[in-house]
Image (cartoon, rainbow, N blue to C red):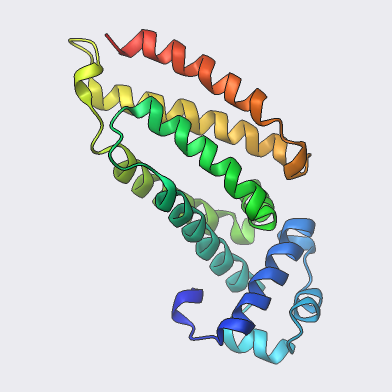
Length: 206
């Protein structure tokens, strides 16, 4: 992982930027380490001093950028808010802010999410599952359960709500593969999210 490699910060930034763009544009199979080192202005020997292989670079980059993306969301979230739907909507808006600030990061995470190369797919799934589990626990462990209807299994209800919005996020990632960040219609996405929020509130809230 990048955090344990002790790379010179300026050199690390160049490797991250180059690898992010090349992998996002070409996918894992077609990305060339020759192009990455050329873009990063480093030698191939330096790249493979830090990473054992292209796969090692790709998986390390995915883990590093997933952590970075999650940290950026956590920095902006209102941790005093205890309504699950307000929190979910806020996370969506924060993601849009990050899309604009880090377009290459988003493009890479989207391409990695959809990556089918057997060499890296299982590793990416493991990292993603671990991140989702951690995020779920951190974001929703302190939700206000008094708003839920009597007799409703709150734990299962929260899980259903989370799965619903994970599904919406997955749909958006599929669309984002065909669009640039600028082409994503934020209002359209928020309208869709709000319609699901109203539906789920009617199902689970008093």
